Length: 295
Image 1 (tube, rainbow, N blue to C red):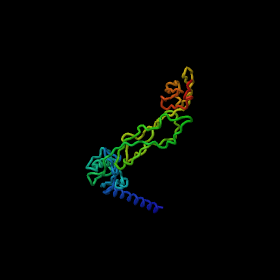
Image 2 (tube, rainbow, N blue to C red; image 1 turned 90 degrees about the vertical axis):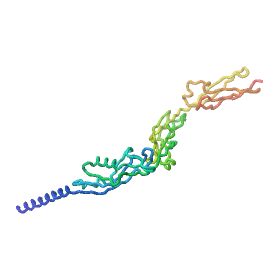
Image 3 (cartoon, rainbow, N blue to C red; image 1 turned 30 degrees about the horizontal axis):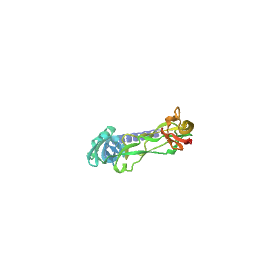
Image 4 (tube, one colour; image 1 turned 45 degrees about the vertical axis):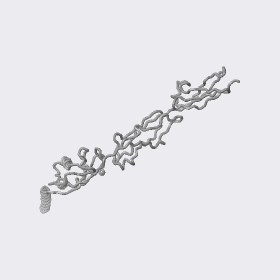
């Protein structure tokens, strides 16, 4: 019984001694290692330039001591997110970021854990000068729009604005296309849909817009009958006119507001000519359209 107790105490002593030795060893450890990190631009567009690559690798020397020397894995492929203000033009086709800006971010993020030393004073981003172009916005998936029975368009679908200024490298904006996708919708009356603008990405960017409005209006189409009387050779004749158009255009309106009548006289007849005065109104029929004269 006594020998077993002594054996357990010995094993516990060995374990504690090993732990103490390990902690003392780690506490004295100094580690320095070269690593690759990545400088990341906030966008492919910086000021008036387009970055050919928005993520640039750079070499950095990392040092740590004690327990922190075991934490190098958290720095593997670490990305430093830059701000637009960090960039400056070096020469034609190149933008640069001072390594001191990168070090400042790293020291803030890992204060007391790691120390850093960048091998090169600047990180260089290849770039092109931004080109600008206005591109028309197309409306796609029009078949998703349904009209109620008897309705027609009085204002065709259009985008507002109908074209957008974009910026990017010349070869990208030369083949850029912008469009909106119409959702399934029953278009009764006037509506405005605020829809995402497609075709904008990290290669082609919009100066002002990420969405555009699609607007349009429909109305119930109706027919209305009017009667107009004219006198020919001292005899009254009734002319029947059938007109079609949006219901709101044919409500509380007189025939004279919709149609201008003129007559063309000849020795044998009088021909009735008409001119529609309002948009979206159509003349279906006029009977009779000529009147025989009395001999």
